[in-house]
Image (tube, rainbow, N blue to C red; front, side, top):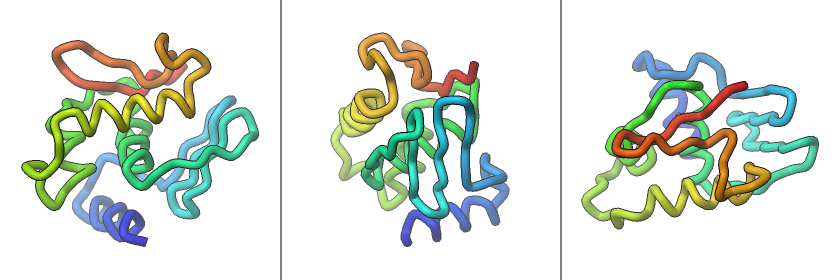
Length: 120
């Protein structure tokens, strides 16, 4: 419910995403209903993972800095969040969505800059 309210607020402010979902040949993500599928199988995501994924798939091919992701995922104040919290969230998403998490095809790291969702 909080995620939905934040998504609506972001959209009102002219945020990155214009729709509350993502679909391609392998994935189907509905942020409205909080249903996430990989190859037709349901995937359980935490709220943090949902927030990270939402921003990444809303900006396919665009590098999102760690600072920007941190501010969006933890808007109450990143000063209370451990430095590696984003890295842990990204790793967990890769474990759930990538075929080979150590060699990701979708959630790419751009060293020294941030992360991006690679759309094929």
